[in-house]
Image (cartoon, rainbow, N blue to C red; front, side, top):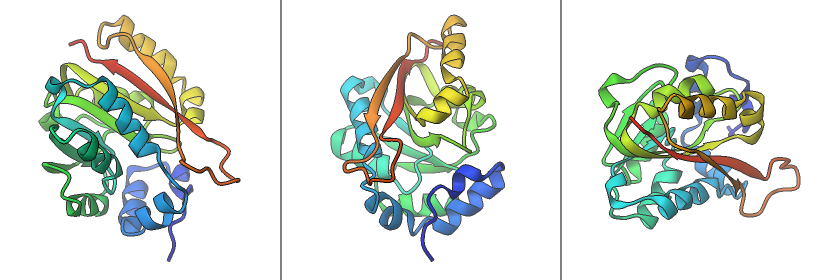
Length: 211
């Protein structure tokens, strides 16, 4: 069995995503991340490191998967506490085995998670806001995880960002006083892109929660 990259983009239900990632959890790092020189998690973690302060701990790694972002954060910001959040129990089992996380939480971010709201000083996400996954309507649930003035570093698939008009949603959130000014960065996805990789960069949106 090999990991079928891109298949998850086609799913429309939470149950399909959970089953797919549970099935492929043990294959993800070796057959996707390593083969494709997937450097995005480390680069997004570096963005957080560049703007975070000590009070931005603990960090919620949203859609933590196997722990690629968490491992990079642990190396770059060893003083920070990190929790992993993911839909897939299979992925969380792999993440736990890395020893990176204080705790892991099985969550569905298409809905509210009141037990985790307001607990985190910063929230990072890579690979969750993408085709077939979370859209702009889930931003409210992700933002709710942070306490007032929490830092957010959210990687968003470039095509998804444009197709779903994330910019309009961020502007609405800013106008409503829920978040401060937001900035979008372009970050390389692969350290050595393969010839067939059309999308070489991803969007990383950085902002702080207001209230």
